[in-house]
Image (tube, rainbow, N blue to C red; front, side, top):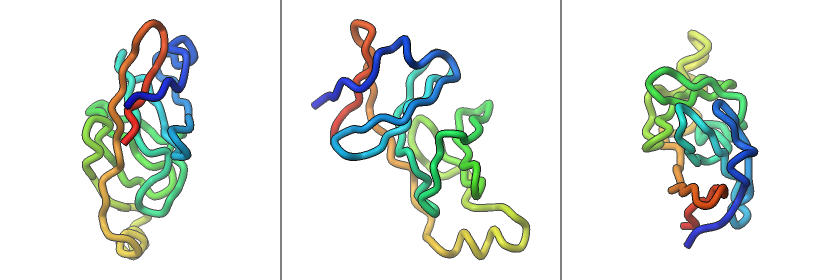
Length: 116
């Protein structure tokens, strides 16, 4: 099942938008011409990801604890490495979890997200 969430022209290259998908906040990101949909909050401590940095190898980095996740698969690239000495403690507060990702389609100028 697909949910129509946003007009494509509201998500330019580099754009980010949090949308509601059946009560779940989902972050849409347009990066290198592709649209990705991932959970809007980091699975480490629930921090918002909208302002996270995107790396050259397509990872989204949490702006709060620097956990990094693949935009394509949600796999963890690094888990709470910062700040030195404290990062391991913060990382241990929650076990390592992948970032949920959602399928995306762009049709007729609209962005649709797959509903689980």
